[in-house]
Length: 272
Image (cartoon, rainbow, N blue to C red):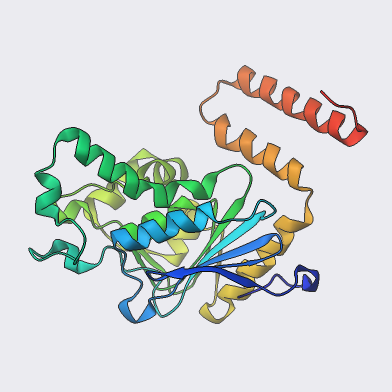
């Protein structure tokens, strides 16, 4: 597992989970989640999503940064194509069976799928997606699930659900909208076109673009920079920024004051 530069004190990494194409390894305050079915371009299934949910549940309390990476030439080619066949995937409901469910049942199933894409933004960790090659559909949405994205210069994002008669439903529409705005988000989703590295960086989809050979090192350096700051200050700052989009200006100012008061009292050793 990659370890941030200059962070030998983190110690050896420990594999906490490895199943269904997902591996979780932890080294001190750094966790790495790896999509490890590179031979299938990390195509995703409901089993993948259950493993991703479990990875989030298994994070030790002292983890501060989570890096999401993938083996192989592609980050994730999206949904496993077997899900679109009448036979489906053994042990999983087919699309036809899902469509035959009641409204409540179908809503519950889709909500369970979304769980694999939601925990990355919780306030106590900062998540970084290191993305190479294709990130399509569910793969694009998984990259969007993270707080930050470092991408290789060969990256190709695409939201292909609309072309299949579906919609992006894995919690990706809100972060996409926040990052690139309504008009561009609609155009990307409705056309299903490719978004390459230069556009990704220019529009805010990517924080950083690097040569493919430097992707892991760039993610490690960013993780190291995040770990250098005091944890509670990062948690408070992330909460302010995540929740600020839903507040008016004066309410955000009030939230800043309250957060700063907590930090000052904590640093001074003054309890509530």
